[in-house]
Amino acid sequence: MARDERWNVSHGKDDVARFRASGAWRNRTIADDARDMAASDPDVVLWVEGDNRLTAGEAFAQARNLAANLHRMGLREGDVVSFQLPNWTETVVLDIACVLLGLVVNPVVPIYRDAELQMILADCGAKILFVPEEFRGVRFAEMVEKLRPRLPGLDHVVVVRGAQRAGATRFEELLEPGDLDAVPWPVQRPEAIKMIMYTSGTTGRPKGVLHTHETLARAMQACFDHWELRRGDWTLMPSPVTHVTGFSYGIEWPLVVGTRTVFMERWHAAEAVDLVDDFGVAVTVGATPFLAELIEAADKAGSRLPSLNVFGCGGAAVPPGLIRRANSAFANSCAFRIYGATEAPVVTLGYLGAAGADAAADTDGEIVGYEVRVVDDEGNDVPAGGDGEIIVRGPSLFLGYLDPADRQGALDADGYFRTGDIGRIVNGNGILVTGRKKDLIIRGGENLSAKEIEDALHRHEAVREAAVVSMPHARLGETVCAYVIPAGPARPDVRDMAAFLDGAGLARQKYPERIEYVDDFPRTASGKVRKDMLRKRIAGEVAV
Image (cartoon, rainbow, N blue to C red; front, side, top):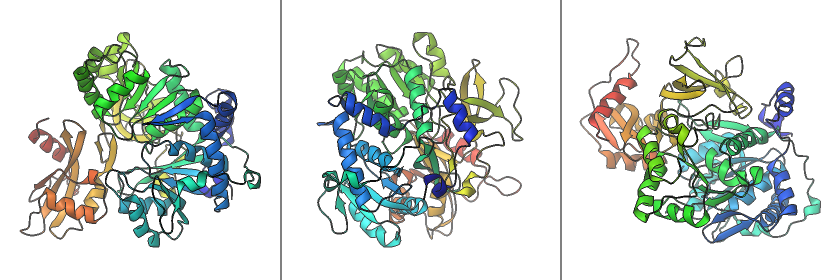
């Protein structure tokens, strides 16, 4: 079954022709890129992770073997390959192999546990899952073993950097030479769906975001051009490769534009300073905590990071003072705010250099490659300078959500994506985000659904009603606060509630860091909880 039929969503022929004619789309995939680079410069090291070095030639050869073995295992065009892996070089090989076979990749963030992982794998119909044996104290292989009886469609589990396990395959076995001639290599279709990535929704059920080869590559090319980078420039990638940022600019950027990547398995600011200076890193993209801690670590190390020309900071609230501190501390005015979403990667790309220093700090960046409108609740453009919902469209925009129900209302009649963010147009071609409609908590760049946490809390016998809101946090920007109307005299504390949520299989990042017991919530006349008032209340009580 062809991929577009399998997923029941595609770009129209007019869009494909228009975007290709304009040059926004390039009519190729990273499989084409990998093949060409392996032929022209096989020994160039494109990805570094600790002591591991992966060249263009090695990546393509390993990917071909992996693809052949996946085909032998029964994987066919349009099947879903999920992976829940750290920033390891194996993810590069896996990604290329999937494109060679026409498989749909599904990156899953490693913070997810039983509940989230089961939902995602079942929703997208994953046929195979790649996990580490263990990472950061979590035994992923054991977790998946417990889930498999509830996932009848999951045919295979592959353990990466682990021992042989019953019912699972070791990744290294799949790199052994396969029968390449036995594979009916599909014709590459760049407009076809290549990735499904889940992002938290306001309903508590993650939404599957669908991207094609073309949409993702367009965002990567736009960044490369706007940031005035060069082939061979090094990128430091601390963001997870299972996020759209790490996936695009860590795994795929070297193939699309010729940059090189230094992966960080886990963030450590002092190590990041060493890596930037040792490799002459030119660019990195990360959330607010990364930038704040990099400033402090560089100062402590006595380095001004002279090679760093770009630090795109986004994914969470970015204080203007932080950008100014960075541009004072570093040798170059390299830091700026950027804005986007999994559905619409990098809508803004930042103001560069000393000339744009004020705009880089005070706005969320310069619009590049998107059409952007600011509208009221009826979809009408607000007056110039006024606040409204930010809606966007362009060649990097996702196709839609996997679930047809999620697609309802996501795009307007003209194809603009309703971001759910409130803001205004500034400086003629910039965006300033001033709030959001979405009931999300953005913790260190990670979107957490308040509704999902509330649903879990409501299963606790001591909770009659819960309202979860964002709470200011000095390092992470926001974290979780739960207002609770108790069902009786019991008042479980933060530790007790964390143990309960752990038993429910939620990621620990979703545990409330503060619980406020109240008799009732502020409500509208219709009874809806006034979360804006709760957010204001907790912000007034927490010193950041």
